[in-house]
Length: 407
Image (tube, rainbow, N blue to C red; front, side):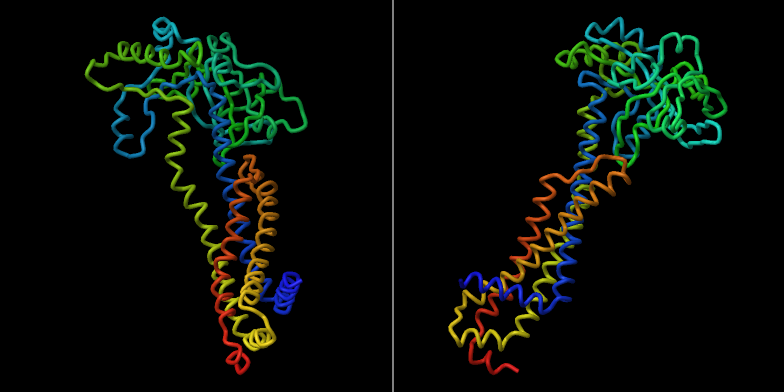
């Protein structure tokens, strides 16, 4: 009965100061909402990255000119490296028995048009046809690039799903002609949707034959990235060693010199991105946590005001038999209720924002995880209890005689 009475009295005290309680709950709600939304976004991006690079295939690796470098000095040093070219494909095929496929890709960007519809800065990929198998890219409609397309430098285009939707909404675009820059291309196929990554969209691309791409963009030396898959995941390291030997020989690298190229794998790419963005993720998560702590300080201040205003009430309760533990428990209940309501509303709005707003804004699937919900709600409750202890203890220590004489 005493417990029920304390709960009833706590709720009545909060209701008597509705505006004050509402503002406190609002601050806590915003903090918890931010925690859930940001943690869900960070985890959503992480999952999206993993899905994106998983599409490379676990036994696939890429040979690039630059590799990974965080400093300008490293970048400038690697600028002096000789470019990788398509001519290296055949030596690798012959010198790498553990390589299943050897292809190449090049990148550029351009404006694409269809009728009155226009898209700017679209990623234009130049691919060898075997890139399809190594990237686990699925064809939704039509077909992918063929070796005949590449050998004849045909003007054919394979579209990402987002490009296809924007250009041919509600109609069949296979066989239609689009303009990439000043050149006309025939649409031969459409890719299955891949999803977004770090605010970008992996479905906004156009793939054309590598030979056509090199003729169209005319980059000095026609540089490419080499995309290679091993016969199995277990033989990937051996395939990478064989490719390294072939490239060092073909590029006449001295035995005591470092490689003038870089070999990267999907897991190495993920590891690099994780290291690079770790500080960014910590800052993102720390900001809403700070707002929750500020909300806790607000709770403490409001409870201190409440204790001061109710000094005579506390004196009366003590004079008729209320124990220190009763007073302490009542004020802790009040701070806990504020945190509980704020945490519950924060979870609701955090889930709503994550699923409805961030998913559409970032073009990645953001769903609040158990970690985000537990973290947001748990911290709000802990903050409410922690910052409610001091006012509750202060109230419980009032001398009843002095409290009754308080004006």
